[in-house]
Image 1: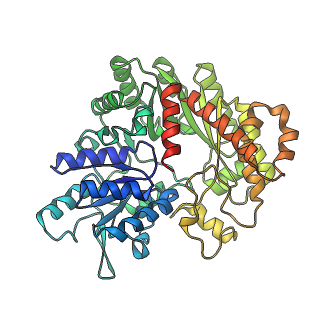
Image 2 (image 1 turned 45 degrees about the vertical axis):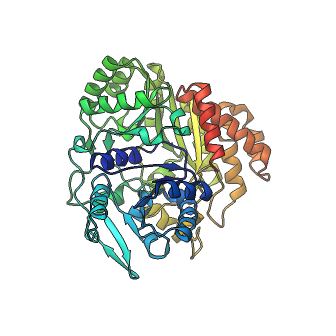
Image 3 (image 1 turned 90 degrees about the vertical axis):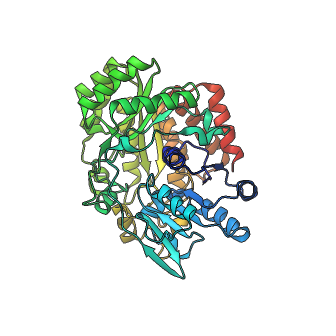
Length: 462
């Protein structure tokens, strides 16, 4: 497998385990530089080359794949969210196959067939381009129970910059909400009739996965990366009872505002929770309700903040800027709400359109995207300017650069509002990244040395 981003992908680690348990060999090349990738392919001589692809990384992955295609005649498989929700990527791209949905059983089945010299055009979840036509195989049922997947194996990242990130665990798959900018609604529709969408690892299995992460990653708090904790408080309480009995390492997790109840906060406070991440997304109730399909009120968000502050739990908020139809005043409502919440670690990001999301249709109706808009135009980072046309892109970009400053130093608001109407420049960008690095490291309590090594690895991979 080839990964163009220096980051720990739980999906890749699960595939590593699933493939090796089936008796196959799995190697990972972590680079976006064609010369590095081509050298690794020459050394490994693989039977199959795979990529895991998010939409924002497709352009980089495509460039690497075309470089491979010029030199090698090896089948290439594209998996991950982008081909799952935009399978049209198979039509004109350099790839021979895509994997839609979960790959822990589809990939070993494919490798079994390749190994045996059998026809693999019938494997569920795999679409194959052959003789100018695409063979579209059905999806297999969702994996349930999740414990039947082989125990996660992070060893494919050994010797890479990923070792310097904090340990992460992904014990819940699926989300019950239908935010307009997220793929979950499309995924539920795609998998309708194929099993339970929200699934949990058992408490015992989750603890085993935590121990695997602790053995591999640097000494930072454990990050639970599943979308929404708090849906099943009994399971969550049992998990953290077992967690604190097995390790004294603090942990960080993600919560939906609606799920931050008194009992939820009490469970976190009684265990070793060092912080949570909450999606505010917008301080405008109109934008949240009409554009994002998120139906909590500002008053509810303030109550969430009070509960967390009362228990001494620090929190990070996620906020989107430059949303379709969002006005400048509504963007400032997001800043004001974070000020009122006394957010410990505010984070802003520019909205980017993704396949099969309802907000994408809205953006098209509002003529914010060109008729020939391609997902290859989506930048690799949400810390970029907007891709929308007919909007003040400079103001949106500057609002991102000064987002944290405006929240942490509200008395600077008049100056910052004027600065957002100037031309973006390198100084603004340096200021933004300085605050981002400080806040990111501190919010997850990462150690400085491994964190700096991770930043250097990210930089050198470009």
